[in-house]
Image 1: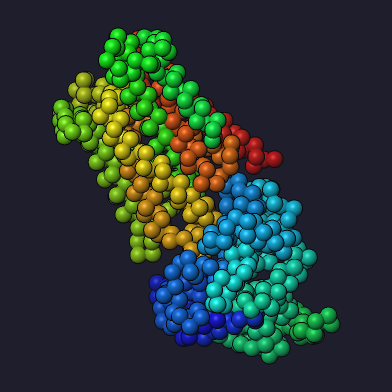
Image 2 (image 1 turned 30 degrees about the vertical axis):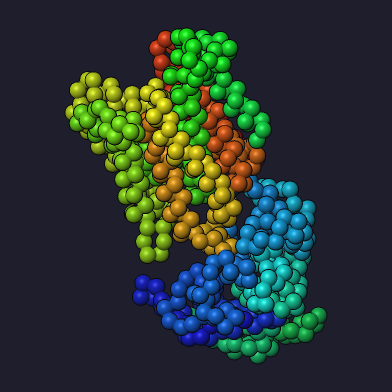
Length: 256
Length: 329
């Protein structure tokens, strides 16, 4: 479990995050929503250890994040940044295989995992294709497959964590659905999933708990039903909406 | 890889046998034997050290080029970007200018010019590295800019030395800058072998980490790579390699830029194979270029760096055109 307490972060005198408490629980999908500049990506950078917080503590499986060696951390926590630039002609398989760098499971096992991860993102046909020749959505799927491959199977008794920053930003409808399925199936295996998402309806469908960030503070936290109310959305996004019920999933449906 | 080794062997043979004096292949058998004739002596004391020097310098520049391109995540990067070559030029021209000829440290057999070049190269890299390193780590893009600035500054200092130099010094400075392997001897071969062979064996071990770096620094960190240590290690190693290469041969242009490119076209961008592949092909290409330099205007010699630039520049332009076509289509 990834747990943050009293997290604050400021840079050059600007306070970007203030007093954030968050638990990413195993088996659950936690989604962070909020307007642009609310501090979503900054929060991810703190939680992944990429940036040191100005105040507060972060612990993974009960151990302070700073005590983990880079390789140890990478073997249980996979992170997909918003966008990755790669200008070298690697094939999809080679890119996904990089997800296995933290592990020493051997080529046979790694190859099987890469196959499965590519299949999970509907990317099997990309296998030998060059990354530099792919469309934006295909590139994003290959990167997603890479982080899935990184934590495909448990290595120790530590809980695994999957952190995704806007994973569906360039996906078509089918691949958005597929990504939700993937997040749910990783959660079902006991992985703690944390995802930043802009589409409120998608957040409602995939998340067990929603964290609403606004101006670096937690504006609301709870189940989609608790959080996605017309009042909260008006307050945070300054948009008038009405809330319905998604007839397929029973989750809240934000109609703007 | 086998193909490249065969190619290297052929290039070595060609380099040994072709030159102002053509040598019959049978004479190879008299290497290190007591009953040598003139040809055998030429082989042992002149050709062989020169061929080995060319191969080692080529391997060193090309593998360091591959590492630099990975580190800067830019296929157009080149070892001279971190200021080594221009710093070495300052060091060399400084020594030439102040007339510190003769041999410092006879054990190494390196003339003062080479030592000056090495120190100059290291100093320039250290400055570039310092400028780009802050509390948050080393910024690769700042390093690129700092490298450009230091290169310009070093160029100006070299020009100043040239301006005040007399004719003889001027000729030596500009010949050195053209890159030349004509001062090859066994001492130099030993010195560079002591640096290059371990380097070429060690660098491919960073291949996986360099592959991850191509994804981006934060991506590499999330894959468990100690990014800051990796950058420091690789910059020190390449600076050392290029520094030594430049010290013994002057500025040999384009090998470090073009060879990794060629190898990437042939076997793909995976650094685990790219680095050793570049080392092999770099050795072959510099050998061929040097053989050309010795024979084209025989008995006079062209500077090797001139040949590599003459071959390299059109090739580079062809690459650029190709890249542009890829963007359009």
